[in-house]
Image (cartoon, rainbow, N blue to C red; front, side):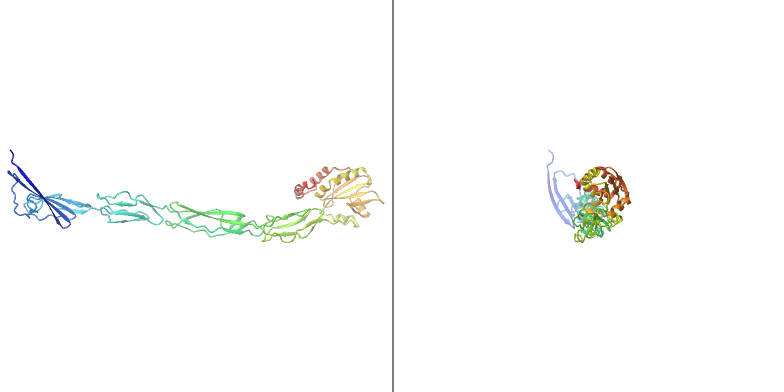
Length: 451
């Protein structure tokens, strides 16, 4: 039967400096002890081991009272954040020295690089467990993790963040404005100062105008002006304002009866001038023109076109014709007597087309009979015998048969008719050969007047 064995183990802790020494002691009582015979009489054979920023755990063969006795073995370990350099296990030798040395060196992570447009602050520098927080300059924003921690293996957690310019620039446009058009114009010249743009990240900004340039003429109504700006990161901002041009207008000026208007500019805008014109055979009574005022009213009073006063008691044909010069056309109708069948037929057609003749500025002169009973008239106004004879001689009008002579506004003989003419045929000739372009346009506007 093997000899019985009894083992008693004691554990003791001693602190030296910032390190800790742990002793595990035991007594081994056997009936047969085969271990080498060592000198255990001196309990402090080697100096007491210590490990700054670490821990020493020792196993003494003689128990807790023999702290550094010959043969004691100690295990070395470092605190968190420190790395052991040297022997991890030492033994007290007969030379009264330990079999090796060790110390704990603080572990550090590498220095973090600075990030453009940002910075970081750390709780314990670059030591283990130090936490570094990243922030960006105004106008920039963190992309990635906001913090990194120095880990036990001397490596940083996560990846390095970046500071990105995500804030758009700021721009403020001028206030909207109202400008009254200049007299006689439908536009106004408007100026303003170029808006300034700011950005928290960039000092140089590209401000772009979208719309009409300042200092130019703007049309009537609302004109939208926009500005846009980009920073170097292509963040965009924009603003807009309205340039409103007001054209002050008078009420539309109606044309006079038997006349028309010619107006400058747009016809009824501030500064526009409208001139009165009367149709042939009518004369202007009143001012020649009126101007649209700033207060939206017309200067002066309305002008009328009244029938021209024909003086039938003149002594000569030329005196009569001078009254119509450049004003009216003349249709001279001659017949042997009032009972002439051609005259009666033509007279009926003339009466039905009287309105159309007036639109074409034509005045009818009738020469009837032979002396001493010869008569001449313009409507109800009778002409003297000398005037009648003068007309016949100037235009070679015979008393023997029916005929008509058509004169233009200059008193020139333009056409002769020896048979009665239907109104449509007569009007067609006048419209084609005697009217100018302006008269044709007015005739087209008032063609339904006689219906």
